[in-house]
Every structure is written in structure tokens, then in C-alpha cells.
Image 1 (cartoon, rainbow, N blue to C red):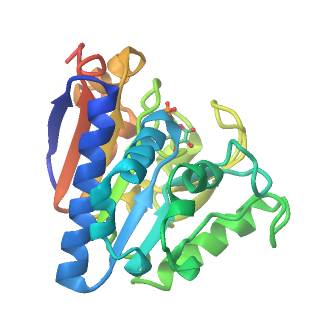
Image 2: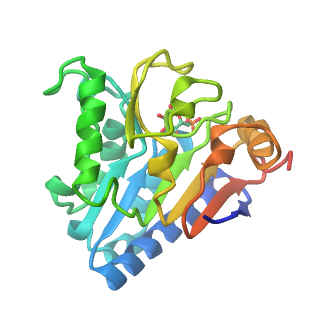
Length: 242
Ligand SMILES: O=C1O[C@H](COP(=O)(O)O)[C@@H](O)[C@H](O)[C@H]1O
């Protein structure tokens, strides 16, 4: 388990650009070392900006995208194509422009998919898909997490039952404090299997959560660790209360 490190960029634009460059490098390095790469995407404002920055980067062609497995840290349990789904946003911002192997894009099921509105079945199916690549989950090369203003990561919210789950890898989340109320999330245990965990936080609205998580508050953002690296990528506004 790794101790948190911090990198502070000037603003949100630099944060997205720096994270994008870092992501491309990690994927290239993983493919050189192991032949393929596993990356876990995040939704939210900073995760979206990162994907747009990858899309704009000429260096993105250094990655063999057909040999990248993409996963999600969480998903809003909504119909396919809903603009609030993290998948929909990721496809629009980046994935539709990449020569990905469709079978390696591991989406969490929508609420009108094969499991209908049974979010428990959809979460169980994601856990089974993850288990097909390792003992319980793949050793993700990099797992990115946005940080909510309340210190949540993925769909693990402070004081909410999902945050206390100690077994399993993908869970159904109900009555989420942030809409929509029904979601699917990786657990802390699944997140902790990643080689590198990156927490992305930009803007003054994240400053309290960043200070709390890196201080002594019991927040999901402060509880996650990568096996090799735990990296906070911040802008000056988000780091202003450290
Ligand atoms: O709902 C979610 O929120 C978090 C953080 O989003 P942000 O807009 O405050 O940056 C995000 O990481 C998560 O994937 C998403 O489902």
C-alpha cells in the first residue's frame, strides 16, 4: 500500500493536461511491460476534462488502444445513452474517437439493459466480469477517481452504507446523496487492487474535501490507496486549504 503524494497544477486546464499526459505514459508503459493495459475511468467534472485532454493530445496515438481494457469506477444506473451516464460522457469526450476493441470496453449495465431495473443483478454481473480477469479484479494499471465536494469517490459517499462494505468488488448503491439515487460502484477493496490510484480534484469547491481527506477526516477520498502509488492531482484552488 502506498502513501498519498500530491502534485499541484496551476488551474483546471493544466490539471487535465498533466493528468492526460500521465495517463498516456502509464498506458504505454503497461503495454511495454505486460502487453496490455487496464485503466479505470471516472465520471465527474475533472474526469471529463481529463478525457477531453487525452482526445486533444497528439501523443494519444502512442497507445495501442486495441490492447487497452477500460473499466469504470462507478456508474449512474440510468438508461443507455442517458447524458448523465458516465459511459455516455466518456464515449462523447474520448472513446468514440479511439480505435478501441469493443469487447474490452467494460461498461456497467444501464437500467434498460439485460438486467432491467435490477441494480443488484447489474452490479453482480460487473463483479463477475471483473473476476474473469484476475482472482477478483484485474491488477488495474491505473484507476482514476474524481473527488466530490463531500469527499466521495466513485459512488462511495461519506457515512453511506457502500463506504462500509468490506466484501465484494462491485455493489449496488441506493439513495445516493448525489443524484441520481441508484448507482453501481466499485468497493474500496476493488479500488485498492489498482497499481496506481489517482484522485483528481480541481476548483475551490473541492478544497474542503481535499483538506479533510488528506487531514484527519474519515472520507472515502482519504481511504483509497494504490498498491504502488496513490497520487492526488490538484489545482491550486483545490489545494488552497492544505
Ligand atoms: O457522481 C459522480 O461524482 C464524482 C465527482 O464528480 P465531480 O463532478 O464533483 O468532479 C465522480 O467522480 C463520479 O464518478 C461520479 O459518478
